[in-house]
Length: 230
Image 1 (tube, rainbow, N blue to C red):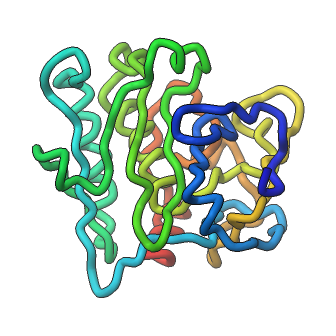
Image 2 (image 1 turned 90 degrees about the horizontal axis):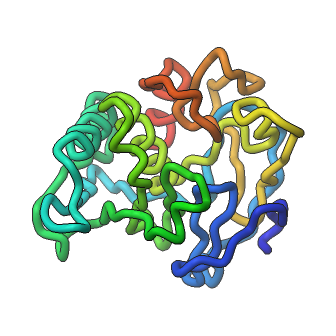
């Protein structure tokens, strides 16, 4: 499908899940252009990005009530993730709102069946200039620190605005095991100028494929990538 590595592609309610945490919808399949395979460099974006214009506020909603609602700690993690992006003075900023119908991005929970996948979260890539509209998170995150929750949410927000995994070309860099190339596919894995030649676990980008249980605020190269794109 779309030139991606077929290992681990899963049919889900929204479309297909690839790379454990990326959702590809039917809408995206219908509108996505063809990308170009990129060399092994450390910060990548999809061909599809958010249309920021001269400035754009992206709103996020997460329920605070009922069985589908989030704990205060999860909401604190969301607020911290938003603060990390807003501190970069980009053309896009983020705001948590209390009206789901007016939100650009809904933060929801995995179903019990989806929890079996083992991923901490999932999201997709922008379509038609808009951010992907949903971030799903695992209930396991309630057992993590606020900083680590913020790192996971910031990672999924990164996908929503068009960022690929830093080590998409070799997931073993952060996940261990055998080398797996997610491939650029048709959505692209475009090198962001000014970022280093290779991804490393030590450099600890928040967009690495797998977490190691530690907080990952934006590194200097993450900031370069965000500033270049937005």
